[in-house]
Image (cartoon, rainbow, N blue to C red):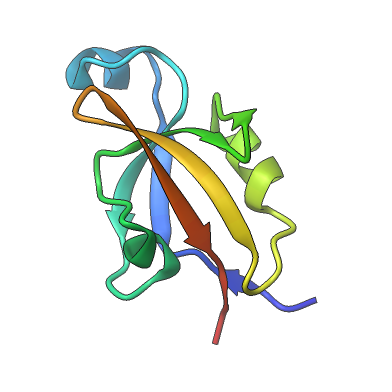
Length: 98
């Protein structure tokens, strides 16, 4: 099995993070996005909060790993994000890691 590249780092939206960002608790906040990565191509930016992947609610990093952990190269994922109080939808297409 080959590794895939997604291209972002994230952290959980705990009580402290939620209060600081004015968000509900839960989800994964995007901390950084690698330029040219699948996440960048999908339009994901730092500060976005991932709330669901393929209609599966994302409450924490474990949910994120479960949803993306067995991804294959060129696999499409439908993602719902919160950005500045608005819900947006993106499609992320994984790539093979070099």
